[in-house]
Image (cartoon, rainbow, N blue to C red):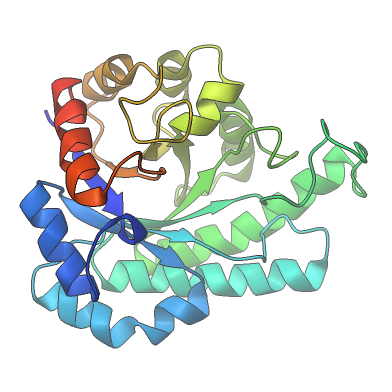
Length: 266
């Protein structure tokens, strides 16, 4: 069965979210992934509600923030949790599935100077289990999902592969916390992205689509056909969203990318 394929809002032409939805729909996309933090998304709620009433589809929100659920600072972690709770409530109201967050982004990499993090692995796990526990319970109450995204080793030190994410989620035991698999990061971290997704099912609930060079699918060497075959075998019912840079103008590259993905089985 073809996958539900969305596109992140900033990639679409248009002055309003309804204009963007009209472009996305005409190109053949099934939805728009929103981007922002709790405050910015909450400020847009009147426009988003109106767009939803007019038929726009918003399967997910990708958090864009400098506050992270795995932050070294407790106050900043609390701010990240508050922001994510807003996103989880909003996406539920808009009829979507979940809000995406990494453990952190650009905070520390153990493969780049200064190499040693100010908190050990046990402290990292404790911080993430605490914040994800709060978010999982909130998501369950709202009817949405926390979509936890592993990042590559150069962008985060805590959570890099789907196997690590699976172990964390199983230790947590909150069914409303699931995995978001990003094929760009997986291209760096996984020996075989399709096999990693296969092994992580049923925890995977959402995918980000980008090629090995972070350009749109079809511009690098990621095997999208193998990934979509795994999703089809598992009867994957989540969404896939384009999160990438574009090699050409959106009006040309986005329809061509969607056609490529459909040919690959998406």
